[in-house]
Image 1 (cartoon, rainbow, N blue to C red):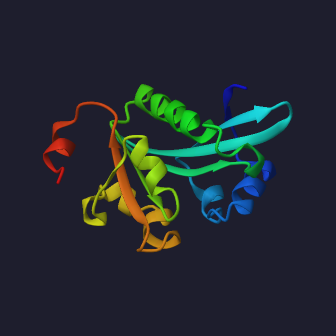
Image 2: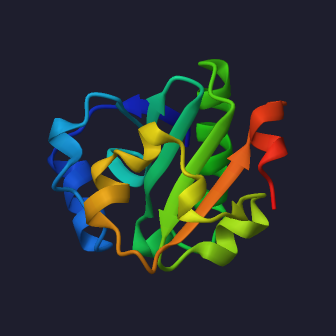
Length: 152
């Protein structure tokens, strides 16, 4: 298995829909980048990264049900973080209703929605698609004093 850059296609949408993740804004997101993992011809995992200058939104992490609990999601997040950092992203943000413990184990910290950078707060996922009860999390990928100064 290897991680590859993929385009938004019906296979991605089906995997996300099966996991009850939002897909309505994906076709209109000009900053969306998708990484995926295939086993043979079958897509088994996807993660999205939206880049807004030095910050990014990690979103749409999904692992096919038959491949869960094998570390595939954690490995894909690590690859996504490296991919984003190579493109100048200093911090990744995400919203989750179900995977807060996983992301905490991966080094993400819960932060107040009030701490969201303007570009992140303006995304459809932040503003409309994810409930306000979602856990908002951040991981600093590289030294950035302005982000570190705002840490609780």
